Amino acid sequence: MSLPIVAIVGRPNVGKSTLFNKIIGERRAIVGDVPGITRDRIYGIGEWLGRRFWVVDTGGLVLGEKDPIWEGVKEQVLRALDEADVILFVVDGKTGPLPSDREVADVVRKYGRKVLLVVNKIDEGKHEGLVSDFYSLGIDEIISISAESKRKLDELLDKVVSLLPESDESADVQAEVKVAILGRPNVGKSSLLNVLVGEERALVCEEPGTTRDSVDSLIKRGGRDYLFVDTAGLRRKSRVKDDIEYYSTLRCLSALERSDVAILVLDALEPATMQDKRIAGMIEEKGRGIIIAVNKVDLIPGYDPSLFRSFLQKEFYFVNYAPVLFISAKTGYNVEEIFPTVDRVYANWKMRIPTSQLNRVLEEALYISPPPSDKRGRRLKVYFASQKGEGPPLFELSVNDEKLVKQSYLAYLENRLREAFGFEGTPIRFRLRRH
Image (cartoon, rainbow, N blue to C red; front, top):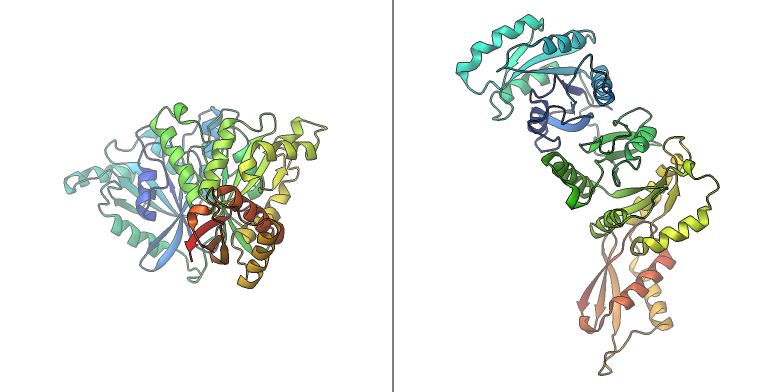
């Protein structure tokens, strides 16, 4: 990454995610009163005084914990420290320095980076006297703020910018293709992301739901940028029991909104549940490109890909244009096919058809299967077609009467367009205009 990186670290529940959200100017990380809500590294772009930089939110660093989840969080924090140019070490001004803060300080110092000790939750000037106790942590640069109210946030950002290394100001940090990884809990979304990135980027555990936030990973490959978003598993609404689950579901929907292409990950052992179909329906409704990735095929040796693909096309008939990949995130089998498949689907999603070619296909379709008539004998006439948008492709049909257009005939025209131009992986939209 060409932009400098600012990592936000600290023990649990000191306000790291609140600070992250305020710096990037949007609610990306989940915020709540429960320690340990953020488990992964989450990236966003900060900008101040004309300088742009990556901001990395991390989970609370807890040392000495043997629980595999906390061990995973620790690994993520250490990786964030390793890649950072500037570290914001956040503490809770109201509690004073705790032994766990001292443990974090010892870890931070080992990395030799530029460090700002951020004393958070200093809501008023009369509380500034609490700050002096934190000099005992051995960090020279200290600033007090209130992330929640944004008190002295401007001073903090002034200081951050002054510590940033020189970078290429013209760097393009917008990913060319944004890809959301969606699916039910525990189907292997995080494992897939980790294989794609080449590191344990998102927490992987047998416990369903170990990814709570949407996790962004910027991957450069073959001269192209891909922003992959791993998301918390989408559960049925009846199973969304607490605020954290609720906000994770919102993050999934937000990730879908931000994406161009969605990879729907299925479990090969249970590949077509109602929830899988609901997620596929959401992707289609949002007009995103779609790829179906059947994970864990290593657990069903001897499967017939052709029969499996036919089964899925019947079960997911409403997105039967989606390419199907059979993969194993655990062994890496066929995962390399994801990038070229994303490229194809994205190209189709953004495809524009010359008007002359479009109408040539339309005329042929009308000749082979003439438009239907209504009960009074009035026949639909389609005069002309033009493309009015892409991402997904949108075609406007000039007709004599919109009421004569049946959904079945639009489906026929869609199939003819797919036969002529491909459009693998992308929905097609029609708009009707009375001539």
